Length: 388
Ligand SMILES: *Cc1c(COP(=O)(O)O)cnc(C)c1O
Figure (cartoon, rainbow, N blue to C red):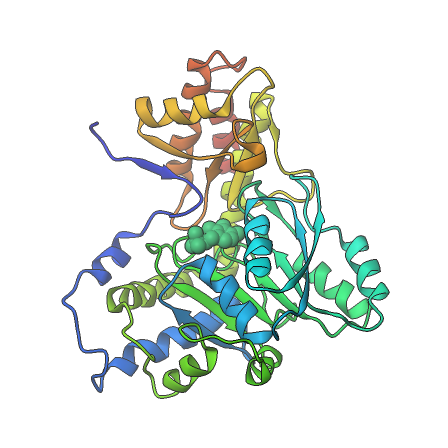
């Protein structure tokens, strides 16, 4: 098909040209004296994107899924009890990973479309008088439903209960795009990956650990080898890695961090809000509902619920085959019920208006009761007027 594919899945996201160029280079010696000149600035700049000064950032050649495992196996002891709320596919998979690793996983089901119920969490933590719960696992941005939960709210619940549990946050689709403040929110392990807000191909698990989490890693009895934080920290101290790093990915990450810091994290957050709000105006103009309940709307991905007599898979398939537009599918419980528009990473108004137009055409092709141009019109009026 002529023209480019329009990638609007919520990961992998679009990689900026400057980042692609930075990755296009010959292989190099990762034990050379100049390698630390590549790694040190990355580990430093990552701290700015995680908003941590007291913590430490790490990069593993892996993906976000591995990030869950790095946090769990380094900072907890074998069989420890962890608490998680499940309201989407990624929370489900994280709980499942913890279960497979032998942790005692307390899962609370929450309606898909809602986020972490803070009152319930606070009550449960107050109830846990013996402090059996060793970690709270919080999905900041549930990518499958387009739901953002309040991490400051989770911290408040822990503090109100005077509970010492570690706070692990899955920020794979929020860090470097939606406001995230590791130090201020008291996040002990923050987990991300390269192919969402960091605008790179998949291939890196990117993490931030508090001093409290690093101390826990020092005493943990959980066996780990490849994902050992201690091995990584020992090598990183001198600017190296315990095994062969993907040097092109590191060059790409260095460039991506330069782009993010040049824009400024607060400006990045504001841009994601503005872009998301335009999509939400379009959805409202179509007369459709978000999967996210009010107050939980994500600024990186919008899951749109189709009317009961429609199948979201038809919209996704027509968008792809007829208009060269890639949308996110509904996963698991919401398969066929929602399609997702990713607006995370290297994105701007005009690109997103193209996606909104493509969605509109695909829905019209499947006889949705919408007016041609209604969503595009609502979004573009918002983008023209929105402060930037
Ligand atoms: C994408 C994603 C993951 C999984 O990351 P992979 O890189 O695919 O392993 C985990 N959590 C959330 C919230 C995600 O969006």
